[in-house]
Image (cartoon, rainbow, N blue to C red; front, side, top):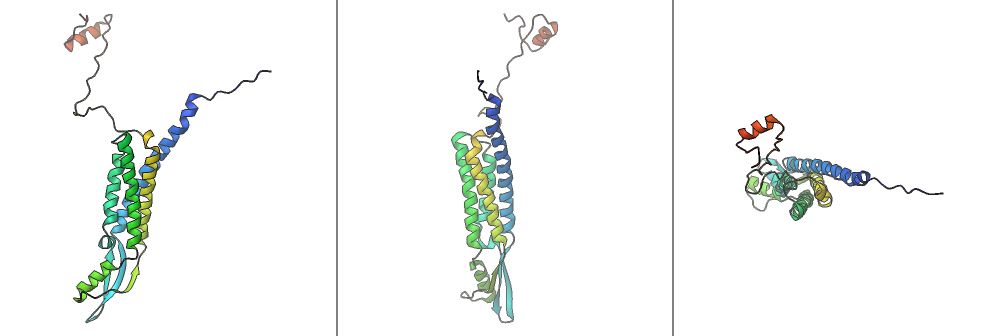
Length: 212
């Protein structure tokens, strides 16, 4: 009895990596763009609040994420730029840009978590409100927005890690144009001497249809 060994079809072998590349591309684009947007929006919200004691009583104070630290917003913009640049570069450049995207996400997480317990911004506002440089904020409390910014950073980090792993299989921008910006010359169409219309078209283009 003869046994026939099944040979895997080349298309089926290539389908797995191609499918993984498309899926990773979609997830990276969504998570990177969403993460940067979330981080930017979170820095505009109130991160902490408290009171300062003045002559008339307690004066309420609030501090937004941008008052506490400008790092998450800056890194979110860098992350968005890196996400777009992943498709504009190739090989080593793509790896470097993907690493920048991952680092932007990690830095956003760290800055947001550090800012979650920060009171320096409110202490500065308390000093301005009271006129006493040694004044500090009282009844200090924090909101959940710093952690929302950290989630945005985590999404950016995920996009960067996916880019580092799968970016070599992702498509790049069209290379139709050379570095000089001029389009590549098109190949002249083939002239069939048995077709009068081709001969007339060649003459209209200023070409010699006989090839002489």
